[in-house]
Length: 87
Image 1 (cartoon, helix red, strand yellow):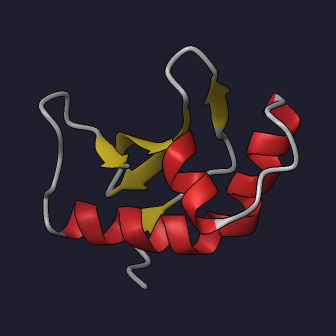
Image 2 (cartoon, one colour):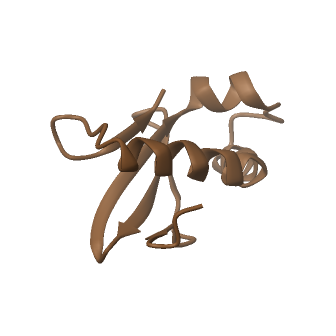
């Protein structure tokens, strides 16, 4: 794991967009990472559609999601906004 990339515990559920947004810090640069609800439910079980349940599922998958985001950051696989998308 690359220790220069950190993932603060500041994830947020954006229901209108159907995604959880979580930050990454790479050498002091803030990078927004997005993971879709579809991706989350493909990799875990969602109790219901409440924000609490979505964020609980995110927490269950957090380590794997951070690894995927870290790999995309290392490969500079950014979208046009400079964000990382896990969809």
